[in-house]
Length: 159
Image (cartoon, rainbow, N blue to C red; front, side, top):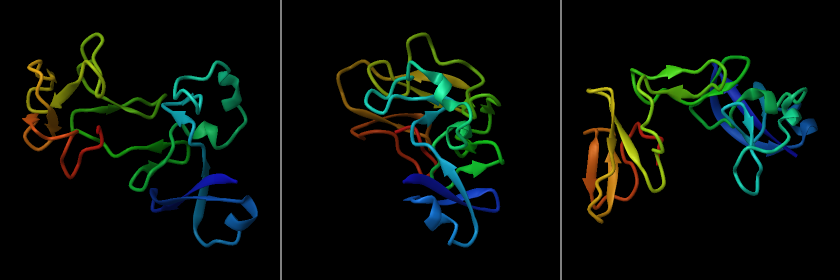
């Protein structure tokens, strides 16, 4: 069994797990994908960290697709691309990941113990408040909002 993405007008419509002989019976364009891929790097499915042997990507059509697809991702014939999170972000043509025009501060991340949120107006990273309270990043107001778990917005994908 493998993962397959249905592509309609260069956009992923759905992703299913199926046998190759079932896929050939379906209408439309179906592209094989690998759930172990992120940014062109093959991940160990137990640790979600880069696998020691990256050569497994070579010659495997699914692993050459750069990222695991989700509905709404685009497909350019080479790899899967998540929707653009902010107007100022640029697509890395090697990893097929969106990158902020300003790198996240050293040691910072979007999840975990040194969280930052992106402020599009100032094109800068905003650190998570260090006051012991629970916050979530609002992409609508581009600030940390107290009492909200995780990021929230109709366009958010960083939670």
